[in-house]
Amino acid sequence: MTLAVPNRACEPDLLQDPRQRQALTKGKGAAFVQALRQVARAVRGGERDAEALRGIAQENVTPRRTKTGKKARVRGKDIIGEAGGSMTGRAGAQAIRSGAPHLAQVVHAAAEADGRIAITVRMRKQHYKLPAGSERDSAGLRRGVVPRSDGTEERTYGSSATGGFSAREWSARVASAHGDVVHAVLMWLQETGRAEDDAEIVYLEIRTWIPRTRTWTSEVVINNG
Image (cartoon, rainbow, N blue to C red; front, top):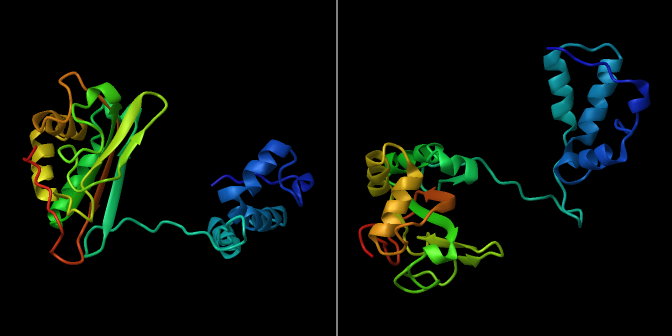
């Protein structure tokens, strides 16, 4: 491990460029300011052991705070193997072009745990066949439709309130598409009369969870339109 010895001029602010200093001390970066200062002092004093420096940093990382000074909420690790556990995967433009294969792992993991799935899709508005928020488009959901200024629209299919989709059924769909989750979702949208034949997905989010109880208000079946 190569360690750069900081110049004394870096103390106490570490960074002299105002733009860099703001990036370091605002938002998420603020939690690490004290840790960086202590590590800088240790290195300047001659410490070179990576484990020792890591320990110094860990002891001085402070919890993130909101603007009002309260401890910020930090999202925990995704866990799908037990009741109440959940996992989320997202795919933007670059991943969409390759079929978002990383989302297949999310789907298959949920299927192994007999979980449920909800999907958020973003396409151009004209690529949707059904009116936004209609009962036929997303039964049981009165929210989950987000029009955007760029002419696209996000729609959510399935939720914990409606029961979502069977992860096992979706796992089979993804497997049939050879791991191409984007293609699997687009085929479902077209088969169920929700998307035009020339539709293209520009953003995709897969949310999975294990219900705490095996009862739900309105199970959504994948094969239904």
